[in-house]
Length: 278
Image (cartoon, rainbow, N blue to C red; front, side, top):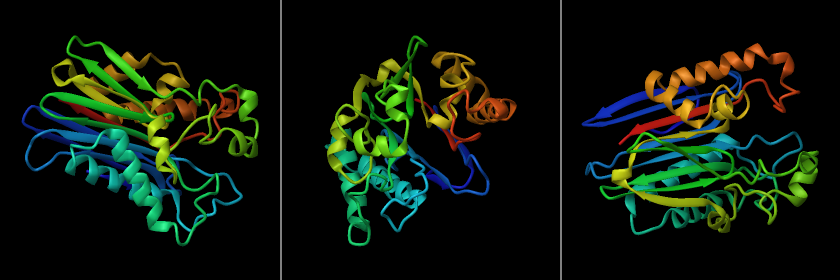
């Protein structure tokens, strides 16, 4: 169930599996730049979760004729097809091919070397009867709940480890940090960044459930400190993905005047949550 461009939510239960997806734009007047999908093949064997957070460009252009939602829809569609159709590929290989395929779709019309060419963070998880594989690139989050109930966050924290002085201006970020060694990496036009992703796997029997979050939803933990990752996971598992997004919106609205102090560039952000019980 892909989701992009507008608010979207859904709950699917097939056999013992429960999947839930909520994706809501930060501003109803602007397109949702997130993409989320849950892929469940007709064979009933395995599945995948894909979550992308499109990077909103500042004023000044991107060198591209296309919007960020166009890019995330293209990249998300390619990731969904490749993840479900070719289990011989590793997740980094899938991401590299999807980035390359998306770049080819607009290389003739757009300047893909521009540092602000459309780009996105990535969470990709795939499971079979035997194994759960995962990949995270940039500042979206994947949470894995073990068979014992323990919640483990899978994070690419390179952006968060950069000093505030390094992020002082967009021009400085573009010139020295974006998709560069010593900086941080996003899925843009260069397939090679797939090798920079955080990856891993666990035996299927050791994973009870998982949740993928864009940073707009992860604010509950990362910005507002309402609880740790285990608390956030428990909220989604018990009350649903919609409950998490609603609570984030309430917190954002309540501290509207303090948003600059908390380091947020906008009051509300696109927020996406995908929850799967295996």
